[in-house]
Image (cartoon, rainbow, N blue to C red; front, top):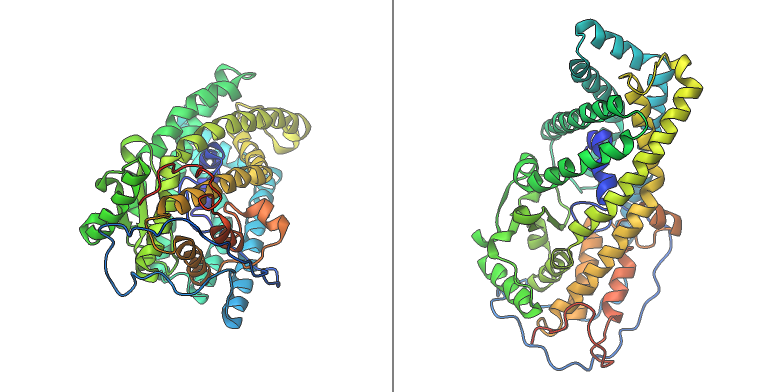
Length: 470
């Protein structure tokens, strides 16, 4: 489940804006299993020259690449049953959460809760912007409290299936921080939105788009410095794993795109989670590669380097920027649809809801309802673009370690196997679930691709890393 439904109200414009997760993660979304197996795939012969190991690769008990071949994603019977139960619950809760949020907003409109909040705000002050300062938090907290049982149930499942180790007190504190940050961010956007609506009732969707873009861009920029440290501890990876950083730098230098040591960070995920992950985040000076300490603990160093290589792909290929640009176009379309839907819905039900026009603060509840609907139906497009980027990052990761890590294709395949075992990934999700929910290609497909991808033996040029490490 994604962090914080409060970020999915007006703050969810960020989600629409990026078209993919800001944190380009190495693992798929929480997944369920269709009860079937993946057919074994035969790995093609490799005719590339013998690889030269990366200088600086740490020599530890987890350094050697895995033996044998990992040609398909497999789980023990017990682990498979857990993956099925945990993942199906995740899928169900996703749809339940959206259905619940839409239902709650409909009830808020039909039962007059939005108008009561508006009337209360108007009694307190005659200033429009101060009315918004009262109205918006009341509306957001009401919506998020209705979603809290779903969030709590998901965390209880994460504890039961040993994906999370976060105690309830810490979890509630994180939820509270999410509420505060999400509500303040959404309040700022809502004040701008209604100021624009009052100035231009027919063009507000366009002017608000112009106003929102730099604000959202700034939010992405400061996130790694201001927001992320509120939830996890970060430190330079160089502090405790200098040899690994040296290996990463050697890898990126051979690829022709060196990344400064100070841009590579370790996140203390093990304080809250057992899952394995890494991601790229930020823009400009805040751009960085982050690897979870659980990833280093539970994978061999070559496997960790492949996972990091995947994230370097996001970094080098500019996926955050591209996501922002794709999302900007998507946001403009979404705002126009909401504009049309808002006038249609208020014309049809405005009198029943006691909403007097688009400038009425109570109309913000209708705006959020339409936003939730647009977000829900935009999910396949958002996730489709994300899957494309994740596949590109897989290709980059395979290319950047080729010739630098012995038996690199097996290292990558086994890294996917470990990711699946630890994170209870779906061995074979249904096409519909993949289409609608998956921000990454199914893990079983990624594992098979790791063995199949071999342009070198065919005399073909790699797609991204033209000069492989030797």
